[in-house]
Length: 193
Image (cartoon, rainbow, N blue to C red; front, top):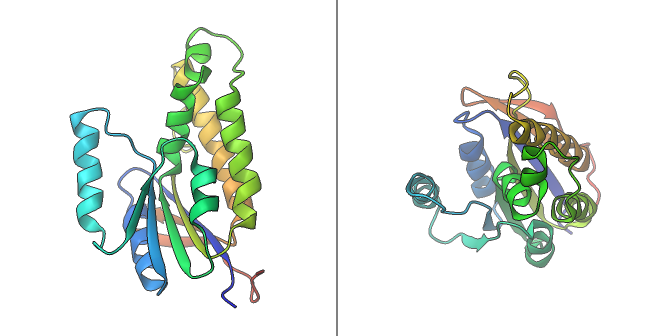
């Protein structure tokens, strides 16, 4: 029986993390389904999405899910399949703005957003249960200065917490810088089913 493998690939903007994730998905030898979290809300994002689409093999499946990521993962995961989620950063942004989190931070209020908390909790509960090979791409944003704007600070804090939660659930974690992968966590000799 095929062993489950959950993998997190993190890095800065234009570090090569998505390209590495695509290479690993292709090398898995499994059926690949790409879970896209981006939304084309402006022309620039539309061009970014088109660039990613052109890079992917045409035979890969595609699921577009900006909010209910855990549900999509649970629905699509199977032992003979590789799911590539690109990316957790955009998914988190979608959650922040779908609920009241961004507005609460902007107003200087304590953030109490069921959409945000529920999405993060459901992902943390679902991820360890998934069969197959799961590759998640996320930005590492914690190496810069503390942002001045309250929404940016909220995003930075939540992105750091999300990366920590997901890394704890994954057997393999890779940091990408300047196109070079650095293994932060490698799978044990025997993986759980």
